[in-house]
Amino acid sequence: MSLAAESPSPSPSSSSGSDDFAALLDAELDLASAVDSASAGDPSTSPTSSDDEEDDDEDAVADVETVEQSSRVVTSSTSAKRRKVKVQYQDRETAIRPDEDSIGSSEDAQIKICPPHPGYFGGLCFRCGKRQDEEDVPGVAFGYVHKGLRLGTTEIDRLRGSDLKNLLREKKLILILDLDHTLINSTKLHDISAAENNLGIQIAASKDDPNGSLFTLEGMQMLTKLRPFVRKFLKEASNMFEMYIYTMGDKAYAIEIAKLLDPRNVYFNSKVISNSDCTQRHQKGLDMVLGAESVAVILDDTEYVWQKHKENLILMERYHYFASSCRQFGFSVKSLSELMQDERGSDGALATILDVLKRIHTIFFDLAVETALSSRDVRQVIKRVRQEVLQGCKLVFSRVFPSSSRPQDQFIWKMAEQLGAICSADVDSTITHVVAVDVGTDKARWAVKNKKILVHPRWIEASNFRWHRQQEEDFPVKVKKNEKDKENDVAAATDAANGKVKEDDVAAAATDPANEKDKEDDVAPAATDPANEKD
Image 1 (spheres, helix red, strand yellow):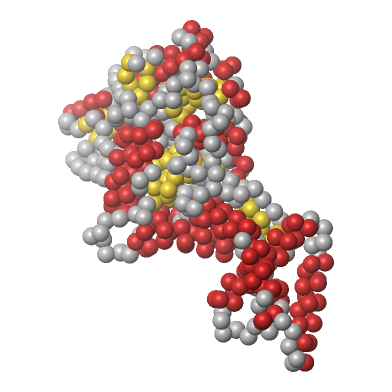
Image 2 (cartoon, one colour):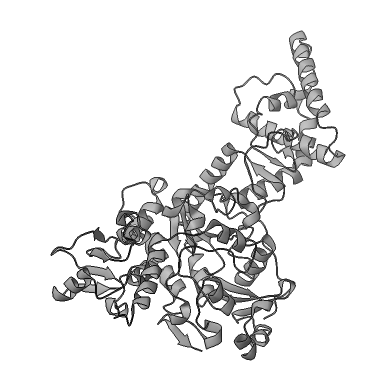
């Protein structure tokens, strides 16, 4: 499907902390003229016969002249807005502190409030109007809310506190959504395989079907495929969460995908964060989200980019639809598009995670819990639900890790423990599972002899993605035909166990909007997933 050029682009609304600020700022600038009129007739600003008051007025005028001299380079229209914002904030401060002596002009009273400055808009403090010091740029830039907006720590905390109260009142949490390989899969036109061309994938994408899932981004020379169930997922999730898009892709690409996912602009509004908004190279952070970390849930297929927020993260199984996506991650198999297959919507990755999100939401807002809502932490809820997956299982690993490594430091060992399993380095009667890639090891033979469950490491990974214990018989440890097969399987298990990603791979992927990142070795391409079905 061709992307409609007239699709509305995300715009600010008042549904979140970031949108709340945007609306406040616009209101302050638009209504300032009325405040000017009211201030003109305010007797508190008129001259008095007191010599002391006259001296104070002279000092205030001198202070104001100093401030205005420092910003004469600003255009006349911008200066007018600055003065209006000053007066409006003066009225607000006077209302907050009615007992304070109001000697001097309104500008003098305002100057005493800053610094620290709450933030800047277009290079001017939106409270006092002072020009931003080019050598000292405090706070965080929130360009996705308003271009040229920078907020200080105090103002960010205020907005987050306000947003938290509103969310808890509405019984909502925050959901941060990755794009590529999580909600969609994209490819450049020149990366389409011969098989995909022969199947007419570009023709299918060009059809004007609003209910379709395959689209052409003509201006970017790309195709995008929506993950099955994504529309229902967003609709149901929006009842429980305030949602953000957070991608390592480019801003223009992120906006175009947001239009596909949210054509009526009801889910995301201005909450679309891209790589240009990140405060750390090749890393995503909740510092860019105007919401409390204690209520934020993250859905992403890449753990590496969330180094500071792993407790908030739900790791998604990657969606590989196009052949270029399989090639990017080293899979020498036919893609879903080439097989004319796709994930099933009813029990695919998004449907599975939606059930998990519903459970997390229910537990967080459980009325039977005595803890106040404002003191609850969704990270503890995520941890609790995750630990239920392999609860009651005791695992021992056989030749899954390099012999020179410490097993407790390996990624898959840690993953099993996070899922509630107990991991051991030695066998004993309490062991329930032996995790191996070769049936010929001593521990594997012990498992068969003692009627323990022998299972491949992918069983742990699949349980992690699906958030429930998978059937062990679907992950057997096969007899190897030769030593080469053993070496390959051990190498694959080692990669998964390490769970590492190369920074240069992430850097390269981040420059490509269709392939935004890379991380640890994946479980298996979606084309081999038993949840796939024929179109």
